[in-house]
Length: 116
Length: 113
Image (cartoon, rainbow over all chains, first blue to last red; front, side, top):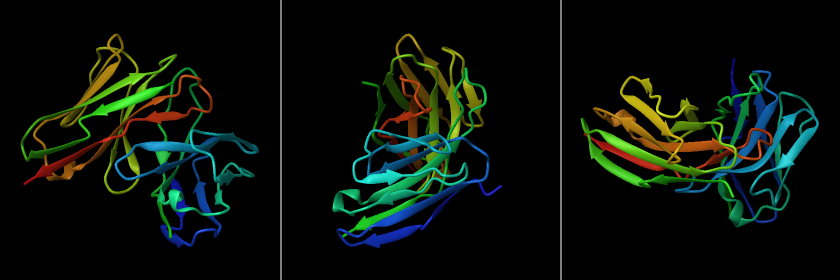
């Protein structure tokens, strides 16, 4: 299993440009997440999905959009890039077995995005 | 509002030292607390704690949860340079929506030879 994969690894954008960060997992997980991590900070949740066709906002959704057309893929879209979106972006997934407990999330390698 | 606070924010020790990292939390409907290690890349899972007073152990790392006082500690004994990383603590959000995790700021541990 490849686990959670993300592309690209690095990207530089100009202000106002748009791009899509790709995320895929091959573990048949229903739950998927997008986080951003700024220097010296923990991870902040941008959007999440509990299954194909279902998405919801996290703590910091402004300036981003997501879609979930398949179980495997969960792309994150930046429409009008701003310097405040310079960050490292992590995608994660987890299984939904054992509803009475919580299962750990598995993280992708991250995408380092710089907006100039 | 759900909150996770870690301390210290950074720590420098020498190989062989023992370190204790702290995590306190405020969350409605607590279910579990998770520790992750992040070495310049994706966080990797270390422990999940659900019961108070029961130590989880993996080699030189151990962790314990105190549900009454709302905190957890992560201990690393006989530290090595390979333990240098950011250690993240997280709890599932109290609203139980989508299995969201609330992360602390992380503790950056640097182990010098």
